[in-house]
Length: 357
Ligand code: IPM
Ligand code: MG
Image 1 (tube, protein in one colour):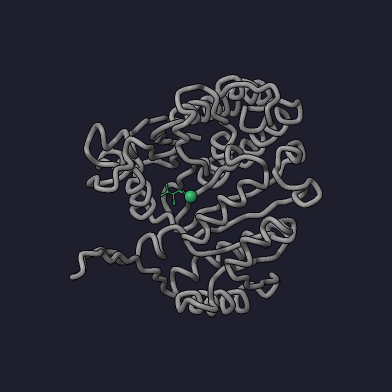
Image 2: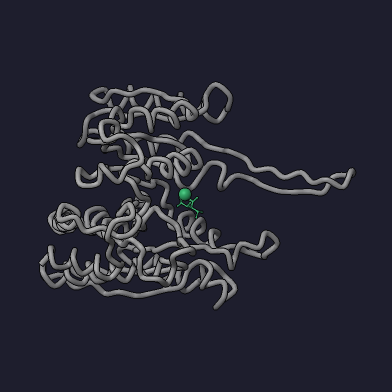
């Protein structure tokens, strides 16, 4: 197979972890006889520095023409000035919107080898395997927003959480389909006791599930309760579907179940066109440039890329198994080492490569 892959390393530890992802993809291409053509483009803070724009037109054009995109992370203290004209995060939100990437898949899987790295008790987390579907191009992050100065000199600011039937239906369908290949249960998370938009979300969710997925069990959980259940009984969830901000927050919470944000990949997909794959962690400016970031989330993101965008299932599984073997042998980056001996970013990449070969 021939494929065009765009690399968007971004800021902070982004370039370090994407470099490892690229090595893995190159090794897969070689081993399985594929030809991947890589193009690297700027996004986020580094793109603001160079072009004054967190998502330069050229970057977007290269992404549109590609088969899949691998992103590192965007943002950092350098671009945090609240009065700045634009922000790195704007680039990420814009690429999601422009490419129609409405579904963000975030698997939260606790490897048996990492149970002891979790801040929770082993008996609570062991066996956790949740697939989150976070709606990614609607809701509070994209609704009308504004700010104004009041007569009393104070200020007022607002954001709007807004969803339409069609936006809810399409993500619920993806969640339902995914549940068919898993344990056949879908949990929808909302705040229907308070928010009108959640009441619409719940009505649409229940209708789609009843009409189109009679074989799948479903339930509704309020977001505040879900924050609690996620740490109290994470094993009881299979597929979870929720709106943009609830998904953003709950998946960061969920990322602690396997002990580190550094383990979790994500896939952002639309109804057609390239998908965007990234670790769910951010740019981690505190450790950037030190060669100690955990590259496994990005490496696992390359597996998602191969599976979802290129339909290379065997290759994806080979990467996941290689990661599993490296962890089984006890190798840990510092985020997982709990004060014990740890290895660096490149070394971890090399170990996965060795297992792949
Ligand atoms: C994420 C990140 C982004 C988001 C930020 C960087 C805009 O937190 O992918 O979860 O909120 O979607
Ligand atoms: Mg987030």
